[in-house]
Length: 435
Ligand SMILES: [Mn+2]
Image (cartoon, rainbow, N blue to C red; front, side, top):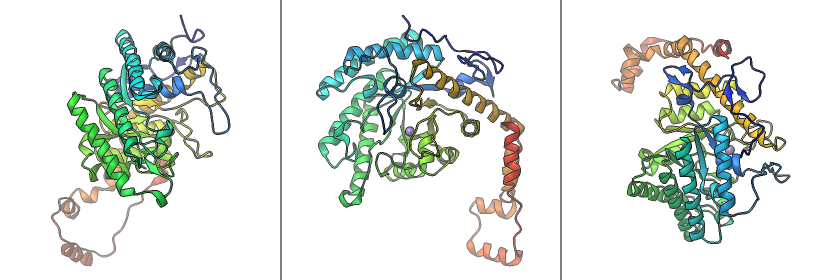
């Protein structure tokens, strides 16, 4: 039986096709820079948005039609969603997925019952993965939806809540490990504060680091080899979140000796909420050797909140793929569509239109980025811009061979420096040659 009877398996038909259920650019087996598109892009679908998001907004309830879902918080209903999700993955040609513990299985009356429910659903997910070859990109624990986490999970002022969150993380790590997950994400949904009138920031940060160290220890104990990630976001729901952007996350990880164990999972809409471009956030992480994975979406600059829209902007996907190709590609990470349809797009087939568009946008971004790299003009321009550090005084500065005294003597004898133009407009024009 099919849950999407009106949707065929999506195939590559090329740019000329008029079929909305077809890829125009994403050709999984096409080779770019020596790897297939599927190997480069490593697409994943988000269980929470695909299967659990009812498309509510701050002004109204959900509109999504989910005829397979009886809305009950039962294990049976959760198990049925697995069948729906795997049909979706198959028809869309997406090889990987991501989940929170509470998306895949219901939270029941007590922790033991919730853990047992999770185990049951994980068993079915494992069987479906085995039958289809689909993989788990990463798992995570939801430490933000239930009212017990209203004041944080790892940063809660209550030690009992901290313990409950730790227990949930343990179970979610066990689930991720059992499913062969390539990674595990910590997103501090409520790890922040609303007012310093009631908050001991230092203590909260110490507690959050303690929780992550406990997870590192447990990872070793169970032999889980997946990559740990933390995910920056500056605000919403908290007024201030501790993991506010890439730089803040890296600083936190270094301060608490966690950097060897973590990389970053960076989301476009969180980057823009932080007042940065996505490319900035990616480059900050990649420069520290800590760019791990990407939550692929976009925001709406006119709305200014975390709208989690599907990425269709070719400048965005090109810039993302330039950074990914520049670091030699993903290893454990991938492009996870942390994106939901608009509330107006409530029919099941809209799930497919949304993902097809995102996948095509990234396939084009990949092709454009590869063309830019093959052309070499941007690389050459940037190389030339810093050429004064390649030899002579500049090279000695980079090697740490000169003193402030020597530089003073040099500058006194050298006169006023001259600068070459940054040529921003010329380079923007050059970028448009490739889009
Ligand atoms: Mn978001």
